Amino acid sequence: MRTVGVEEELLLVDPETGEPRALSAAVLARAARGDTAGQEPVFQKELHNQMVEFATHPQSEMDELGAEIVRIRAEAARHAREAGCAVAALATSPLAVRPSVS
Image (cartoon, rainbow, N blue to C red; front, side):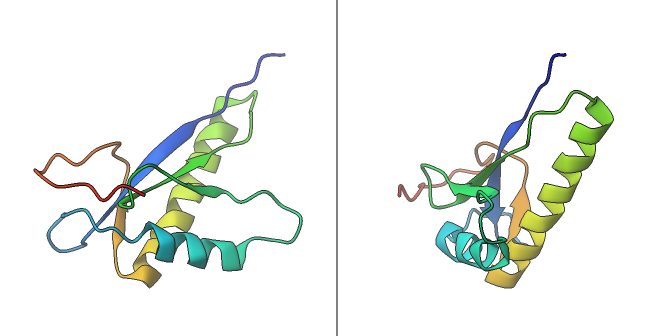
């Protein structure tokens, strides 16, 4: 049976202006506190400090894959909110910015 997984980059942005925020370390620290011992972390560092990424588990059912993406995006939004930003499912900012490279 074939399976598919999804890797997605999330841009961390100011919730008011949409400007990218270099808060990946804070978001990842909050996410790490919620990880269960022995489990691989869901969120990973990206090249830019304004981003985090995640990868789903391989799935054979697309509705299960969709549900996992929604669940992980909601978890990312919660961690980002706690760090003072929001997430956008964008690989790059549509605004003119100077990225902070990690």
